[in-house]
Structures are given as C-alpha cells and as structure tokens.
Amino acid sequence: MVAYREGEPCPTCGTAVEKIKTGSTSTHICPNCQPL
Image (cartoon, rainbow, N blue to C red; front, side, top):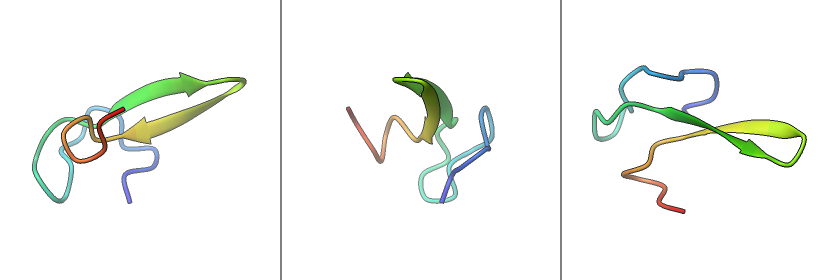
C-alpha cells in the first residue's frame, strides 16, 4: 500500500510514489506498478 507516501519509494519497485487528483479526492499510486 502506498497511501500518503508521495515522493517516497514504492516498496515493490523503488519508483517514487505520485499523488493524482481523482475527482474531489486524491490517490497515491506507483506509476510503474499501477499504470493509468
């Protein structure tokens, strides 16, 4: 789980976690492990 870890490394692959807007909320994803 990468919630609230913006900028920190993904525990699976080491890529920096990103915060994206999803409507009125935000979601934290690893762009490598969870491509849009």
